Image (cartoon, rainbow, N blue to C red; front, side, top):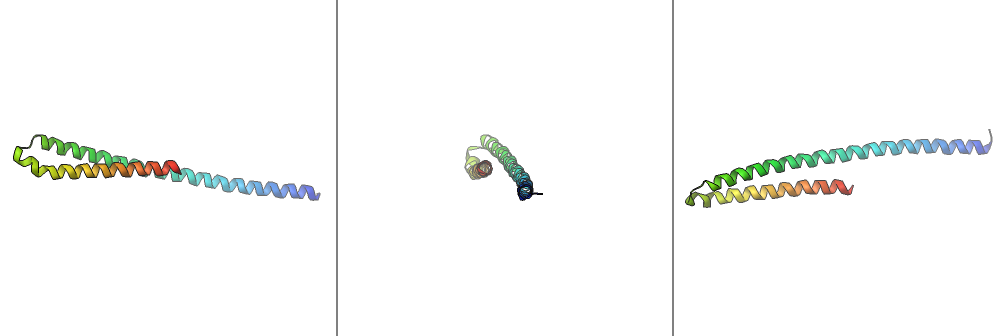
Length: 100
C-alpha cells in the first residue's frame, strides 16, 4: 500500500467518524425540539383550562346581583391574570424553540 492510499483511508475513516458524530447530534437536536414542543403544548393545555375558568367566572358575573358583582370582580381579574400569564408562558416556549 502506498502512502497516498494510507492517507486516503485515514481521511475516509475520519470522515466516517465525523459523520457518525453528526448523526448523533442531529438525533439529539430532534429530541430536544420534540421535548420543547411537548412542553409548549402542555402550556397550551394549561392556557385552555384558564380560558374555561375565565369563561365560567364571566358567566357567574353575568348572573350576579348588583351587590355581588363587586365581590366577584377580584376573582375575574385573577382569572384574567392567570390566563395572560399562561398564554405568555406558552408563547415564550414556542418562541424559544423556534430560535433553536
